[in-house]
Image (tube, rainbow, N blue to C red; front, side, top):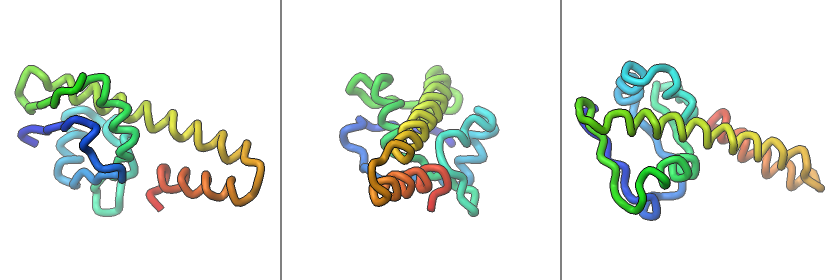
Length: 124
């Protein structure tokens, strides 16, 4: 975990991204279990993070410029902020999808929202 480069969010893919198990463990050591709030912990110890939650969290911090975070550098707290903001964005998305399931006018629409919610919560 020497450094992380968070690119301009408009150039990032839309799908979830996966943080490898070694990096997840290093992030947990550095930032605690709050790291796990960012996504779904996979069986292999990797963490799947919803890209839309990451974009929502990182965009205000980037202001159109890349954010470079070094383990021992002065910007280390920036990664902690991103971790917290991604977790908060994910919780908001869970609430929105739960309400969408409950308020769906048809069973088919409710199932679509439920599938998105299950993917967000359980990675399935």
